[in-house]
Length: 186
Image (cartoon, rainbow, N blue to C red):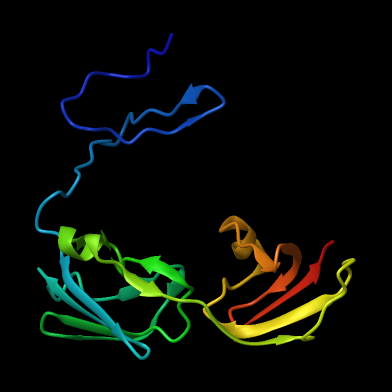
């Protein structure tokens, strides 16, 4: 039986570990969810390496330190002008992504339903695969060059990436955003 809790009309910050619940004897543990007046991404486009977003509700306070991500990758060279935010997203990972904006000490911007319903799609690009012929009994190490691959072997495994040559699965050895190395199986 926990006697460390008291009734409150507002949500409370709680911490629990090993069945023990922390209390707030000298601190008000109330918190508020900010459901209104959040900056909102109302439009987004991606061309070349530039992500451009229209954001309503920007203030100098919320825009003080801004981080932009497209998929799993943080973009660079973030610039804010009026209600426009642009960022260089040179190596986004393939997939369908809704851009995210994080305002330091404030949190993430809301995303308009129309933007969420039309994610930015980044396709895999393969520029080369060597060797050009493989042993049908397996054991051939293959290097695939390209772009927009997951940034690591762990990320590829998390996203359940599968490489095949015909029907033969190629077991991943290493993965970077520009290269995959795998070994074919029978």
